[in-house]
Image (cartoon, rainbow, N blue to C red; front, side, top):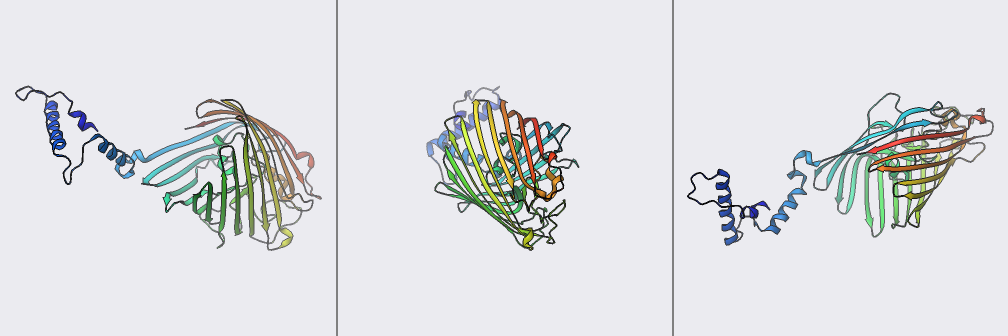
Length: 418
């Protein structure tokens, strides 16, 4: 675009002996432009008309290979930290300052319509005993291949809705739901859209052990979603195949055979692996301009080789969000998960304040009631405060003291995104 503008540059007389060399170059370019405009585009030449130059410039800027390598990198992330008190015998009974989550995303456009993403996590949900830096999602992404998007690598499993707000900036509260069925795994994910219906399908390793598949069986996950700005819905299903550690976390722990790693009054399964089928239905709808209601219902059906140790886990969540002002919102969330069987319990940790690990596989029900405020006092910065109650119920005959099962907690957190 700058060449036509050069034609308007001052043109010094040819006889000027002391003429600036820059002026000489401008004069030469102007003469060249005049010839091209007079003769028109020739074979093998490029038109210098404004609209043609805009088109060429746009094409070049959209091609990653035509840009400087550093222009293809996008860096983003967030830090969430604050003070947490789980109460009772929870995760932090004495109250502590903790880094909840700290994540950096490196997203690189490697070719037209192809990118690669690496997620680096310093801390993940307060569990940072070893001070490790680990990777989260790591995948190559073809954005449009014959009408579908394709991810290859490790990614969040497309199941339910909570995986969209597993990261602190997207969660209106500090804690997750009681069940928080969430996982990531290595494999292939494809997604697309038919009319107003969006679909996702993934085939992955099916094990919580990274890059070490413990069974030939694979995890298959599918998700459908639809709706509009005022109402949305989704339906998800998954089948893990046999796995020693399910890649789906339930309440913060991988799904395993009963008795694996923790106490179990009802006995210990002799099986080394378990096959799990999961499903979940979600919906949300707006109530006017300032309120949104969300509902969730799901199940995980654990199939052990010994039927005595089969477990059916059910969860549900009811959430109400209210926008009090453009920068201030309030959220009330009630959630549950359990076997609801007096004789059959399961390991439900209550990620992350609850810490039900001391109850082992004797938990038959976890209830969580949480209320919080979120104040976005700066762009990409928010203060959160939350108070809540975790209540565990154990199976008949469990030796664990019921007085330790009711826990009031409180937390505040600062979330900064970049």
